[in-house]
Image (tube, rainbow, N blue to C red; front, side, top):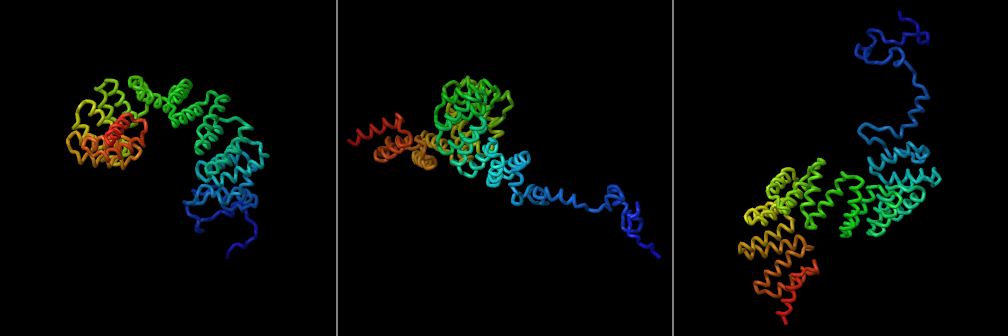
Length: 401
């Protein structure tokens, strides 16, 4: 004798009763008994979900499935489109889809929005379409002068191996935005690449006048002062970096070299110890090579020999360490070992002039003039202005005549 069904759901009658399959755990965790469990699915709820279905993530899949997105639809919603564009660029790293979205958004904006033109240029740049990117960025600059747009445009000229065009864009940007440190640093980098150190230093000083804690400018000025035979001034810049909290093997290595060349020998080896404690495998070779220089400077050739051996064990392709090890072998009287080390150094670094010159000088002293001539010619190909190589070549020519 069950109760007849009336077809109507009475208030509370939809609740599951004892013995009908509802457990206590489910009853305690479910929300609003009698409503949430029995509420019918409305069609309006389905329409809301359909609108965001393309942005819904799947378990184990990407956060947003870009293949399912209708770019034309989101291009009509500028705020959503910009957020989506940034996500595509910086998270998905998919410049092709970003270009598709930017092109659609640019059309929606009637080709008058500088932001979409700049992003379109960025997408073309990442795709390797440099001339198309240049057109979009120049068009963006006609609408609005932005430092990021100038930087991106200069990057294109750098990639096209046109540093003078890049410098002209930096100068044009600095006339309109004179206090932007990123523009000053970028211009300094190009001058350094062109081996115009004095001009690069001028830009780095301007950066420090605006931002006294800029790490890159401080490090560049310190290196410039060190190579200008002013290690005491370089030491002040490196100490400033330490006070700012910078702690890296390169900094401790440079501190050690500055201390040594400025006469502060008590701090020199301590700095190199700190550098070696935190050094990674790719930097240990350079640090041990510098330790060998310190050892040669204080006359401890045994320590220098061991340091060079360790440097080559850490980095077998270290050309300078191989060359200096050959010189020490020569001082020990191991002529054949020295010759082999010079050949190996020249093989590892055909760009370096020291190994062929040293080998040429050794061959000249051993009486092998033809071998010496061939080697000194290679040295002059690497460094045509090397005075000692020129003098050795003149002596060989006089001998041949």
